[in-house]
Image (cartoon, rainbow, N blue to C red; front, side, top):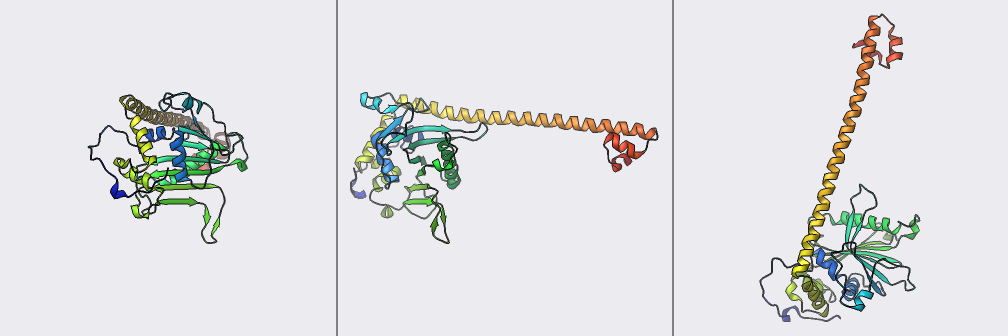
Length: 328
């Protein structure tokens, strides 16, 4: 599928952009693109060229808006409702899009654009277009959720898989003008890897074109300018699928998708506020009871003082200190 191309020879049609058009960089559209087996494989190969993946199975999404009607028996046969990574082919992949993970009720959950699993290797791949987010902490949080998901059915940490968090960025977060950033745990002084099998990869589409490897050039060109869709078979396929999901029907689904996310966020904020108020009321009630009990003991102490009872006895009866009794 790889073709060399000269950026200057690719015809660009100068069309006014449609303000309602949802591009490949939109996470809703990206998730739908990743539900195509061929495109999923090609994009994974660009991000993880050292990995050898086998058969790909697209799983039924948690979000029904992402599931497109099957175009035929072949597509229906390649869509499953439950992941099964224990196939005879250990390289076989399951792919889930818009996958949500939340392990504790009050914990902030995550939603993965594309969640990929084989028997030995797991990966989360998603599009990033907002440059002012703490990318490192985001990757760390995603990684921790993937680890919890991996161990959900097992308490043995040795069951952890090789794990990748992959961000396709339309901006250069690290400002080093590198086409790819690859991170793993490492002892810098001793040049020694930790071998925790966790990796973070950032594909930087904003890199200078002359520094981009040949295999990444078509994708980066398309990410920077969707009009460059004819630069390779891969980008032509991506662009065709993007356009497939820019119908009125799919745009309505996208609006519903966005509404659902905002509604979930709003409910989370309201629930947090309500729980905070409840905690505040309970705390106030508890503090009131404590203060009421202390006031009662002070009243008892005053009566005992009037009766001329010794301070040591008053201390034992009321629990007040000598200084507190002196102040009465």
